[in-house]
Image (cartoon, rainbow, N blue to C red; front, side, top):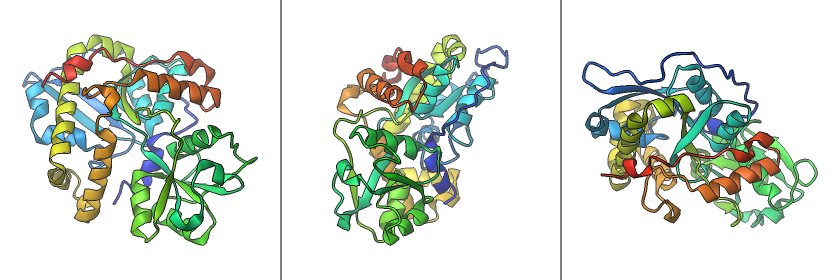
Length: 341
């Protein structure tokens, strides 16, 4: 499956953003059918990973909303945000740490729709390893896919909450993803691994029983959110309302018809669904990520601002994002419009 190596790139560190926009009119163009056009930049191309977008399209929800989105897969959240800043895209799907870093560096961006309701990464260890808590990782080796990935941000922040510091209290080792990570766990070169939901399923399929290591105090923050420039957001409130409503409807439809989501993706990206059983597993894992938590109040897209602030402050305190991120918020003003149907 082509998208497996991209999941660790749900975020990317070292943003080098050009903060000058293209100067075009931010007002959305309207096509000959009267639909408002918008381009959405994804951290990577995949139907299974972003199935609510494609479920909305398959069910005609964009037609109902009179919007015409185009989806383009790029190379990580930083690239997606850069596309929005340069005018090549109108909406970027981004991990929260990349959004925070971009805004802290002066990018005129606003996060406004919760796509993944929770983190897409999990710290896992073989069940027979004897490691049952974060504290048990002291003196151990934690595997990551590659430096700079979103799995690194998650692992380092999770361990730091238990006062474990990289290099001092534990080692970090790049072991690759998927099957390579499974091999590292089997051989013992890594005692734990910071896995995307996709990599976790590959490791399980290799025959390793896994235990998830977590911290109950870790902020239950949005895992992926929609981001736009402030100019585009201000110029297109109706497009934001209608597009968000269609995505919300696509999410709800997919959650009620998980088996049919694989059929949707079989048409959009047939290479991703060659192994239908595994594709269904990924659909179900993404379903878990987009299921509304209690804090959402049954409203799709709404971002839990308390959890957001807790996560933002944690990353600032750990110096994972710049100090300037300490005041970066989110926009929940369109939540009612997204949930009218």
